[in-house]
Image (cartoon, rainbow, N blue to C red; front, side, top):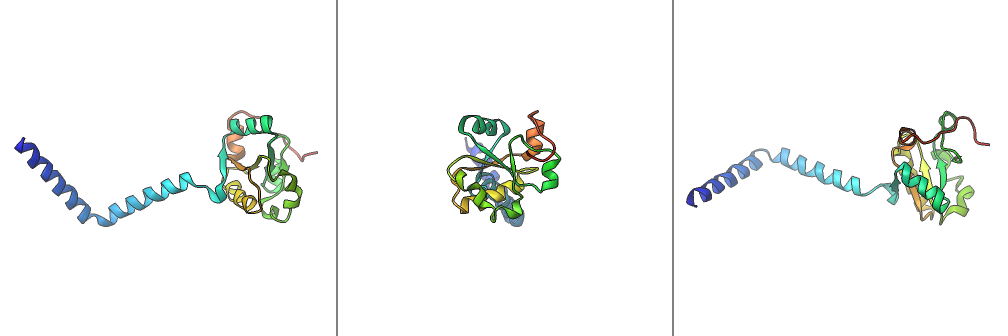
Length: 154
């Protein structure tokens, strides 16, 4: 028993010694871990990410509306069927077109999900209560084997 206690004591001493000698490294590891955790739990503007499958269910069950916030040339190269193109840069000035959707599920779509996460914050500030971002964007949608339409919406 005494030998185990001595071993534990040496282990504690060597652990404390390591921390003291590498305080900058330890602090960096703790800080980066904390930031990673915070960023994974919180998205800009309270955006709630949805997978392509969840987006499909929102569209079919709750009449979710798709807003593609990419530039028109990106939109024409391939977009989700029945999505409306409102580029991220003009989203705030064209919000009147979406006024009827304030309490409906709105799914924002971009190429990878990064721009739509930011745009969710814009719509949330403008009073939209059920705004979502398509996790992984068009790339994830295509990877899931779901249909894309080319050309302008009619």
